[in-house]
Image 1 (cartoon, helix red, strand yellow):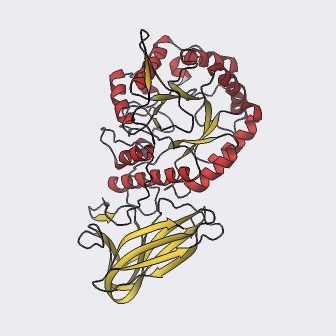
Image 2: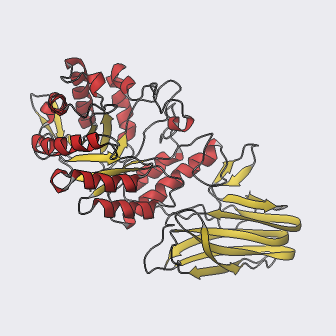
Image 3: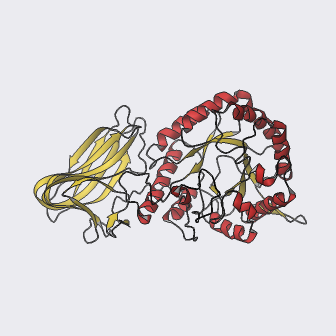
Length: 487
């Protein structure tokens, strides 16, 4: 459980506020930050301390205890940083401490002069000298998403990591790999660094799909890093109008914001199962048009929509979810009672997170007039024999060793022909279904009945999905209160 406020002491006469040193990475609750209208280097060029302080209040309200700040040598001055930008960083660290927040400081962003090791040390010293032994700095990330296939980068890290750990006198140091092939890259990085140049912990980033592979991926990363601890330092899902991490979910704002919440819950659950620290969140706010400097990132629409808050500062549902997750809440809900709705492109309403697949003459809608409990249910209807299914990956979707899965659902309805069944489908790491187990639902008109499916994961299974499928249905069926658990 994250305390409501981290203890702090005021150093009288210095104007400096310090907060207790965190146990890193175990206690980390990190949110990356740029202003919504000034990403990356623009943040420091358009430095607005009042705006920063106001944004930190929202960030702290998420039960976060650390804000991530990123700086670039080219902007701050290299190899000797300039007083102007050092003063802005010092003000940022002080404002963070005043908000009861530590700082994750990411160095050497947008920088590739790995041959200049002497200049690298000189620049790092000019940046970090005021913070040696300073508990306000939770840890230092020496390089964001280093490329382990670049031999020069790895040799640079082999020199800089042990030097920086000694220089900082107790402040932890990390190094991160990106999301594209994180397991491969982390394995290569561990090999390249050797035993004498390891960071205090390794950091990896995860943005893949809908989070179904989080448990498998995090386990592989954890094994690659061992015996050094692992932290998932960037976790994010874009509420995009052009791409979705979930198969067949609508590309509407409400549908993708619900998907973002589900992705975060799934990834946090995977971390918790493996005993990993809470993942770091990318990022506090969406970016407004023009907020990302010209780069390989700036032309991509999804890159603007990873925020927990929209660009106007209004919260997405994910902000509420992260606040609870950072406070230690186990949120396993996947809209199994169909209470949460989202809007389709044509304005029609659909149950959040349930993807409609292969509908053939079948309607699959959220019905707000019929329910077993609450106010809504799933309504499957057809006037001639029809097929189709709706499915969802539950929050604790990843396979658990020596455990079996159980799904239940309540149903009622009336059908002239056909049936409806509840299934658990097992999928491999390539999203191929490799097995399924089902139970027929009762469609006794006017009476709700409960069905149960219990099945153990087959070999090669990585995650499960819960499926409600109509088979030659001619009539109406209502399904409600779907559950999923491991036994």
